[in-house]
Image (cartoon, rainbow, N blue to C red; front, side, top):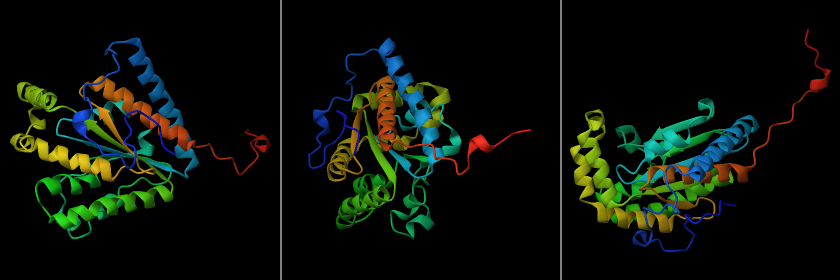
Length: 270
């Protein structure tokens, strides 16, 4: 059972990103009352459902965020997850593997970060880097990374069958939007720390990354772990849609407060 939504990649369909508009925003405006109300309702519901999830302690939710550089992963976490109880939320960022991580299979470091029962885990980048950057930069032979699509599907199936709901979000921005965001980082001294000359080298590989993403979205969109392609040029629209998708997943999980193992009516406080 998954959240039905226009942004969902249906299993068995071929994803072509040039057919998706990263600037789509339903004709809404940033300051429209509808936008503010939809985001508020989704976040309010997320807080209530997270409390039930944590108290129940039987299920967990894994949110996977992938995007091109400047795609808005950090901003999404900051604005969408605001107000949740940090005790029940864990954010993991997957960067260049350490020597210890490289000494194991590519899923080893990821499996250690999946959420425990009752928790929500957010992956800022994820195991998909091993069929994205690894593929684009030819860090392993093609037969190796090609096998990883099915290995990823089996890994996610294991998580789903043992109580973890998975929501995978690709924050899709245009190449022109990326250029504008990179320029803003250069223009603002307070943002220089977020810029690296290597970002420009990665930008030169845009088409290669698009091809890699299209394959990952196509081959790893499953019933138990769907992909959603989020139009992300407009940050406010991105935040609203992501919040609604997470709320929908939690609502379908339907966590319940556990019944007490005592009779509260028999307790007398003095």
